[in-house]
Image (cartoon, rainbow over all chains, first blue to last red; front, side, top):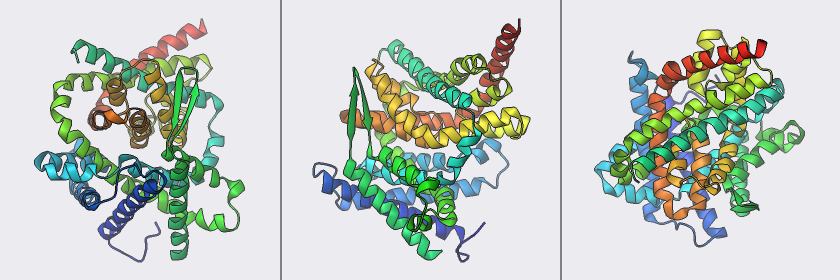
Length: 163
Length: 263
């Protein structure tokens, strides 16, 4: 691994998270330029971004602590999950966090992520050549299968429960 | 290397701006409307520009080895604020969600659809052992770990799961962002589609739930909270569903299908 000048990993994670929320702020501002009717940027937005940053840091901390345990379920539970749970608990305890975080436009969070996702797969595009067209066809049905399966069961469940 | 990283960040800002400038685009084909969001343009632009053909001169600096590995190594951390956002979406709806909690659990079994629909198709078009790896699930980390432990990744099963992994990584979010609203147009309820969005991959869930939100902005909080809750549940139950249900079901179906095929 090519680590940058030996910054401790938690500092690096904190900086990357800072980059992430900065990009969200940038996206939300740009969105406003093109569409003045979209979610405004105000002090609540900044508070919301700070909360997102904080919960992410806490989630990383929990995940790293649990990595030392020997309980497989806890050890293998993804960081992403811990961050959601941390945020959920904090938002249940304090309404302020809900108000603040919802001042951050949802779709502005997604654009920077998918930008990074696109760059991250750049070197794997060549791997596509190693997969056969048959598997590609199967992939389509596998994706349809999981989504349609869940959607139909959910629809059925909601109907039965009278919702 | 430092300078390359700055180029990368400037490029990211440029892509975001372009994607947001293109904005929402609706393509209507008959009764079905395909909604393309800025996030779709962001991934398309970055993937197309990342092809060998475009990687010359300045672009070579942006898509340098260090930058691409930076993006893939830290992608998960870039995603964390999104995951934190889901907490704020679930919290106000927690009572509604707990009320229909059992629906969340049974819809998780819908993930067996990969075997039920995928396996017969795979066997039909002539795949055999690859089909085991390719249809056990949507080829995320859980299936990858299971298959590599049981068959190794060099085996045919391993090649199957790796292929799905690659295809899912490249096109998963794109696929679900188009497929979810198609089912909406076919008459499925948004709540059901939101729950189904928790397929176990965060980018795929984002693809599916974001387009649903774009189509039904007034239901944003319901859609996002249902999707996030179901995603969390899949992270907890996914491994168990795979080992205790998907694997035995797949083994049984595979035997039946392949035997019928030979006679």
